[in-house]
Length: 623
Image 1 (tube, one colour):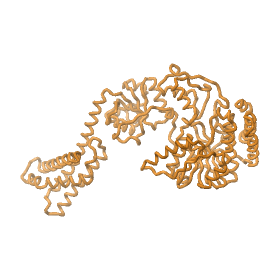
Image 2 (cartoon, one colour; image 1 turned 180 degrees about the vertical axis):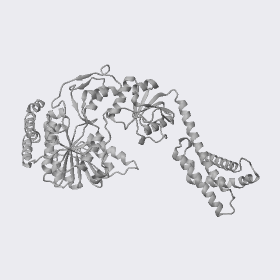
Image 3 (tube, one colour; image 1 turned 180 degrees about the horizontal axis):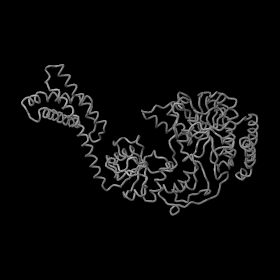
Image 4 (tube, one colour; image 1 turned 45 degrees about the horizontal axis):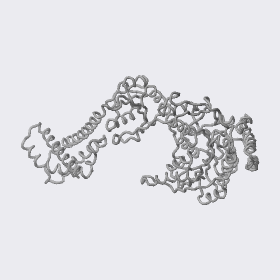
């Protein structure tokens, strides 16, 4: 109430002063008896009328020191409405004090100008106060383009941040020697290093939407110059000056991030909206992200299925927290703990829920561990997929999307071999099924459970050394959100029997990844953290492939998705015979099972490739 009383008093003063100034202007700054009588007769009614409009429109709730152009425009509209209302009342009621129309017009303009000036002054005083407070703050460069640079600079200047912007670096500067919010703009082509030296900057801020290449280049320069590099939310995430700017450290995901995917949102929504969707491996890195992204496409029900009780419990807690957000509308969720190799359980689940779409992300994927446990790999990756495919075919599921791996291309390890056999069984059923069985094949994802990034992070936290198998080892990498976006897109563009291969970009040397992570942790290689080369582990390749020879002419069906050419024919009886062999040896010794697995894989590869698989490579991995 105190704030309201102060606001009413301020508005009353402004409106009374505006009318007085309008009369002075109208009568050439001479206070005639007529002017004084008009002011005396109308000031009280005019001020009360305008205050009533202000209270009705709630203009008084718009904080002066946080004013934006929208607040100023709203206040100007209020003043205009008051002028129109006064003129209308004078025409409608003869008892109303008669104010010359020219005075009403000038009063409207002066009132709007006075309120706008008050808002600008309050904003300027706040900025000036923060600037004085931040004189000893860290000298900061903004590395961003025009609108983003302006938003970031304004946010810092109007907040209590311990940063002081001394320059803006525009990577593609279109207006040389310009100034934004009182801060000089430097042409990025001059070189970031020289700009840092010139401005004596201590911090460089970048918007999070910069490409991975740009983040990497800026981070490397900052490291050499001893300057801290940070990422900030994109302009869509920064409320214009109303909250303190938040920063975060650069991560390995930022360095490898690519341009955002352009998704066919309408096409994906057509596939998923009001559908029942099953996600296997729902507590895993990929499966859990699939479940999260599905929320944006309006499925009627999501069944989150995993054999890990603890994993399902964790993701259940995540979704329960989302339910507490009143702004979000979640579909019906079912959290199911079951094993995909249990055909009776899968049949019961499909019969109960009648899913239209299945995303099959359940798999054992750790290469060295599966070398020691081929029975588990075959049982889960091959026969688990067989169970799901058969049940999906029986219940006429509309789409079945299996997530595969680049290790299924000419595999030299148990994990890759089992995924290849799963791919082939999927395709053999697709030739005779109404269900659209689709395989999506891609490489490594950053930060997935058990992958190289968490391992390197743990080794760095422990003080090193970081272990890398070989200095020439190459891998394809993609962030988890990007991979899942393309998996969902694949569900929309894929046809039955398709092998869709994601564009993974350029491969990354693992040793370079390790060096980047050491640098991002604030350490130096090799002074603080060393790298030790341990040699290839069982089943590992120096490099991974995404295509067989017969798939080299794959066509692009999306900017980051390829469709491999269809194989002429996959004989179902052949696949059944190969699966029978695996079944017979499933309880044999590890060596016998690996030998049979190699024989089956060799025949499949020879059908899919111009080059047969090298038995020596596979057998070495089994040793």
